[in-house]
Amino acid sequence: MRKLTLLSLPLLVYPLSGYSAIDLTDSFSISGFGSTSVTKSDNSTELFVHREITDHTCYDCDTLFGLQADWDITETLNASVQVVKRPQDHWSSPELEWAYVGYDADTLNFKAGRVRIPLFLLSEYYYVGQAYTFARPPQEVYDSLLGFNYYDGASITWQTDMGDEAVLSLNPFYGFGISNTTYYGNEQITIDSDYITGISAEISGFNYRIHAAYINTRYTMSSSTPDEDQELNIFSLGSEYSWNNWQFFAEVQTDEIQTNWNTSAAYHWNDFTPYLVYGESHHRRKSSSVTAGIRYDLTYKISLNAEWQGIYMSQSDYDKFQTGQFVMPPKALGEDKDAQVFTLMLNFVF
Image (cartoon, rainbow, N blue to C red):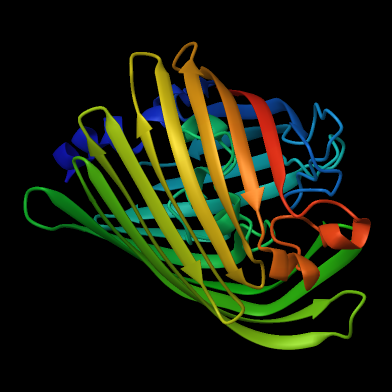
């Protein structure tokens, strides 16, 4: 399994190879990451959850910065803490994104504390822009949970070889009740979950990775409308595959109120990686998008993205005051149903 993991590293975690920690002692290290951008839309209606991009040039819509501390307490016991100033946070009030104690026992790994929800392909390094090709994770899928990425609870990961060319990982988890507040346009939404439980499964080989997850949660949503007590069953399936200089990526998420998916292709040419992304949202949000961009790796720790994205909505959905990827209906503001977004993004790790 060790051999396969090392062989898989260049494809599956290549951008994270620059995630080089600063070793303060033999067992304690600090690492960090960040992103910032200059971005602008041609529509005055705010776009994207927590980004709120408009037709005014924005220098901090994507700005985030994270610090992570890792401590190898013994050969089998470790602890990790990650604090992130997310795009929606003030610098004075960053978010504790994870803080857990882990224990390794042969093919099993136990974690207890605040842990990232293992729902998507990019969940583990969602905020590390250096770790993926596009400027932002595709909004259709990754904005579907309104930016809620962690739970407080415990998980077990079991890993085993599947022959000589693949590794299977199973990760059941349980999270206790937690409260999250977010702002969606002019509306404050508080989600109080009674619990969150689920399982993720992943098969990885030398040039591919397949990830599937199921989550069940019961929660109460409080906003300007009456409280709603709901149970939600969330399913996701994603895969990435590398072939020569090509890399392909696809992911789908569905639950009782929405279905979202995206697919992309990228071509690595020296330090440049041009890419195309297409995505759709249905039911709760109704829209489609096309993204074209190019990433340039200045070093293995610093990269630049130049990106154009078109976001589209049908006329009938627009007339029904649908939001699509906007945070409020553009028709309510007398704005156009479509938007173009231009982004120049800087990502780094240390």
